[in-house]
Image: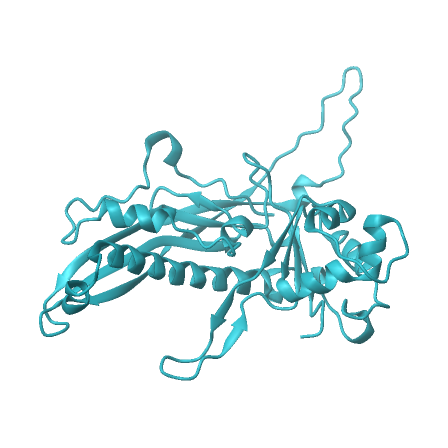
Amino acid sequence: MQTFEFTSNYEETGAGTLDFADAPYPISPELTKVAREYRNDRFIADEVLPRIPVASMEFKYLTANAAELLARLETRVGRKSKPNEVSFTAGEILDAVHGAGLEHVLPWHDLANAPDPDEMKRKATRDTTDLILLDRERRVANLVFSSISYPAGNVQTLAGSAQWNDPASDPIKAIMDALDTCIMRPNIAVLGRRTWTKLKLHPKIVEGVYWVDANAGVVGPDDVAQVLEIDKIFVGDAWHNSAKKGKAASLTRLWGPHAAFLYMGQPGNPNRWGATAAWGERFAFSYEDPNRGVRGSHVIRVGEYVEEFLVSPELGCLIRNAVAG
């Protein structure tokens, strides 16, 4: 089992902030403020894999030995006996954050003809930030809904009448059985929108919440979380265009027809399924490029340094194809 006790002193020293004082394109406070404050409230990546600050691009985290932490030992001590001695080992994993960024080019004549050039720059910053966050959402969705992110015994795949769009299926039993496979019971659920829609309408879920035999009805995420004895349900709503640039749009959901259940420790608790290392905060700057357009262009760049990673894969379980695709 792994913990994310990073070997850094970020909180005490303020290390980890990005110093671009000598950079050729200084950070723009106004555009950075827009980039940091902007957030698509339909994205769930930051809730599912919270950002943890690290002091440098490279960071280390510790791995704990679950066998040692769960060992059955004799703890009773005789009147003159010596207590049994224990020892613990830990491994150290080296990882690194990666830069993620995009540029938005505003030709000179577009700005010259804009009613409010500054608002055009702010909108460009917001739109660019949204695409960076969309790609992060994709990475997190792929990690959470990948079978290789879990021990083999913590993954099951449903088919036919066992899938939750079939009224005869039993999602409560399927979920409870899955939760029991983890050595620490998951406290959050992550579902794709289609999975959640079928689950909240399922007659056994409605019956479990309202204690009545119901073939029609709908329940909320807090009600279902209480029935399943978990803290929170996160529903992935994001779509993306998977077509190459210039081709007809092909819109698909980022969060598939699956259901993941993860243990995410409370603040101060290093035990969790996964996390995101973040070096500094999101930033934005702009510069003039005389080689784009007849009279040049104004270029806005937004970026951040992050890395999503697994801490303890055994603290989660996955139900694939929970509903028919």
